[in-house]
Length: 65
Image (cartoon, rainbow, N blue to C red; front, top):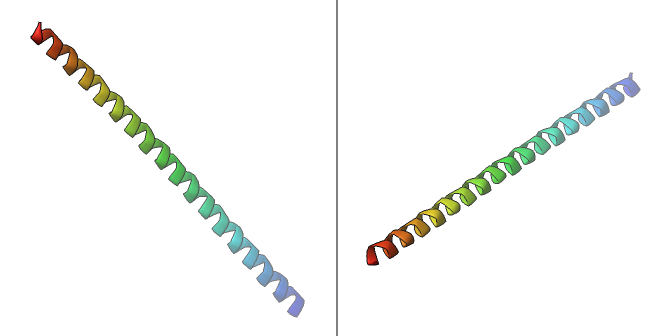
């Protein structure tokens, strides 16, 4: 029975490690997705800022003329 118990314990440990590794991997993937979304939001906000600045510059030039 000792051999079977050892094999069972080893299998449980391996299963736990596989589960932990899978959870870590899914967390990392989720983190990367969140990071990519945040970067996209920043780029969009910067583009909007640049667009508004340019529009305001054009309006100011038109007012001066």
